[in-house]
Amino acid sequence: MKLKLLSVLCAAVLSACSLDPVYQRPAAPVETAWPTGAAYGASASAAAAPASPASYAAPNAADVGWREYFKDPRLQELIALALGHNRDLRVAALQVAEYEAQYRITRAELAPTIDAGGSVTNTRTDGAVSHSNTVSVGTTSWEIDFFGRIRSLKRQALENYLSTQASRTSTQLSLVADVATDYLQLLSDETLLKISTDTATANQRTYDLTVSMMKIGSASLQDVREAQTTLASARASVASYTRAVAQDRNNLVAEIGCPLPDDFSTGPTLLDSDAMLADVDAGIPSDLLARRPDIIEAEHTLKAANANIGAARAAFFPKIELTASAGTASTSLSQLFKASTGAWTFAPSITMPIFDYGSNKASLDVAKIEKDIDVADYEKAIQTAFKEVSNALAGRATYVDQVAADRDYVKSAQDYYDLAQARYKTGTDSFLTLLTAQRTLYTAQEQLVTDELAKLSNQVTLYKVLGGGWSETGVQEQAAASDAARS
Image (cartoon, rainbow, N blue to C red; front, top):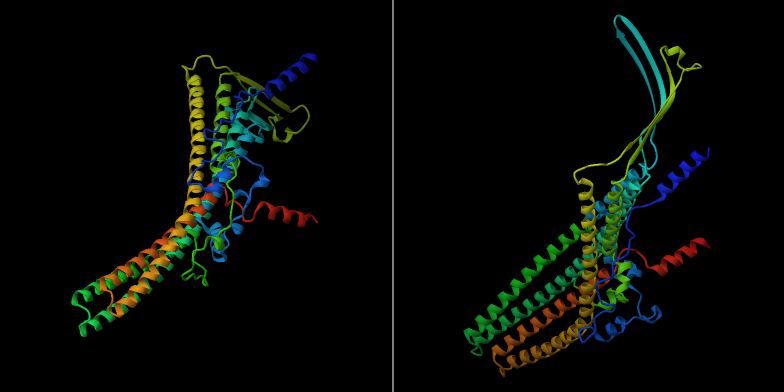
């Protein structure tokens, strides 16, 4: 009895051991603060220094739901449609379900599989016929996981499943940002189409005026040809932006995975970041380890590789399998379930690797190399995230100054054009001066819209690279909803 108890205790101790290396998260190969300098502005410099969360003026991007960040109701509708119909996101969700099922398959190998079976055998030998009838319940080839091989494989499958979940979240973040960027591109091109149309209309009036002035001798044929050239260029721009608007709408349809709503219309809209986007805070670089789904994905992949090393190590130890069954057996089917017909089998087996020509050693080496590769991928994911956030922070600070300068440029160009037009009509200035003023105004207006789009797109990128876009509503709203539900 003592021997049996000792055997059970030893088996329990062995089954609890793990040959996985002790996992330690690699150190982040980046600075502990965001870059500072003229490109980042005063707000970025303040955010770069570690401080208490209460000192931040805006919430962390990952805590702001996309409905709160994107204020435009039409954009909110497009994002909701994309989350429900986009095929890439659907495939990512199905892959999560697939890996979850693979994890359950691996986990099931820890427990024995019990089957019930029956057979009827009739044999003729040397003119004699024999009969055999059996019914049994038992398990076949159940590996007793003394050295943790199956548990390591289970941990590997679990980490692969969690990695796929993070990948699905990363796909959603990219989708939300892509829909927002395509929508902003549509607004920008519609605004540029209006500017081009207005410019073409103004150029048409200038051309008509020049023709009239040539008839009375106040303008030359050269002036008429220059006006005609400018008008043709403006018409070409109208055609170009008309095409761009149509293509932008097609891109949105492909992005959301379904037709645009019947009542969807934008029209030329002022690209105002304050009215369209909420403000978010960058936090500190270490926040990315918990916020960025691609970093989370890389770490789960690394943990899966760590568990795979444990499985490879366990291959050096004996493999113990158990086959057992119990039932009844009889030469007559009618006597099958009567007394003294019981039958059972108990067949444990052990396989001990002795010489495999280095196969197990090579498998362990492969597992260790794969882990080293995953460490490098994890560190690269952190470095990429740090670079993307730093670039977006530099853009957030500098685009504000750039757009402000563009607005001054447009105002000056408009004043210049109005003055040149008035002086040309009175014959004070030449047509070349008016033509230069027209081109300057159009260039200034086009540059303003282009830089406004770049500014907004950069803010969308900052929201994405900080881990925003995974939830519909923010943390505070979710907590308030939970409190309301409990009450």
